[in-house]
Length: 107
Image (cartoon, rainbow, N blue to C red; front, side, top):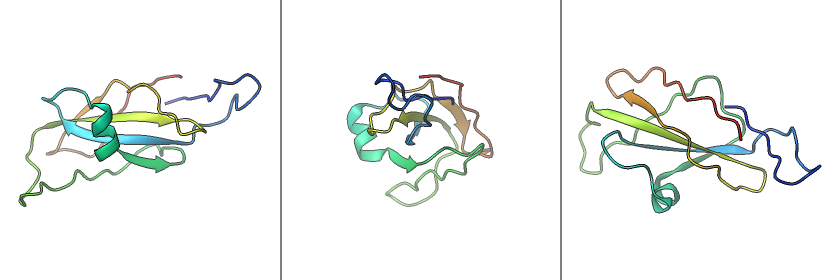
C-alpha cells in the first residue's frame, strides 16, 4: 500500500502514513460496520512490514477457529488518526494462513 497524507496543502505531503487498522471477519458476512471497526479493529502504529503474522482470536465458547474462509480488511490511518475508506479485502483460509496479499491502493 502506498499512501501520502496530502489533505492539507504544504503540510504532510510525501509523509508516510501513521499506522493501519486491521479487522478479520468470516468471508461469508458483510463488510465491517463502523461499530465493528470500533469494537474489533486492531490499530497498529507505524508502517506495515512486507509480511505480517496475524492470529485470528479463538472463539469465546472455546475450541479452535473453524477452517473457513476469512477476509482481512485494512484501513490506513493518517497523521491525525483519520481512517481511509476500507480497502478491498483479501481472502484467506485458516487452513493455510501463511501469506495474504493485499491490493495496492493509493490515497
